[in-house]
Image (cartoon, rainbow, N blue to C red; front, side):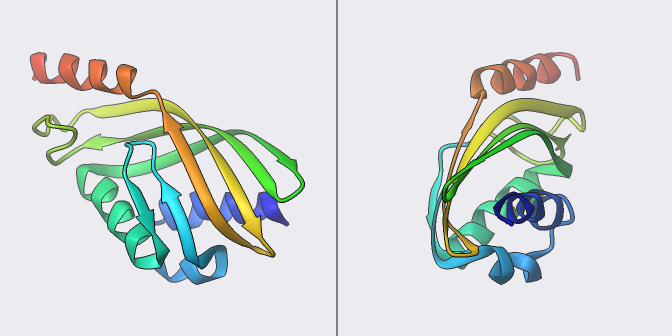
Length: 136
């Protein structure tokens, strides 16, 4: 059940950009730390982060490489990708695809995600953004 919720978090909320699915996956008092370092609380805070990423990266997708579940926690090994279509991390849009690796730790309270802590390889992402800007 918990792995299914993590799949729904990525496949439906992130990849399909379906905000209506949020209450069925995330606790109302969610704490969220995104791979880009921003910390948000509750559904509205999470939606702000979701919108920020989708505005900057068109066709955003999250590829689940591995899920491990233990107790009330699920660990996800990920690849994140999207087309750089708006200002992002201080770089102007290049309309080129960027990708980076990351991982996330989900903590559940019952059937809902209560906490998400995501760490991304921002060094490689920034190197790719720099390279794309030089090769525009």
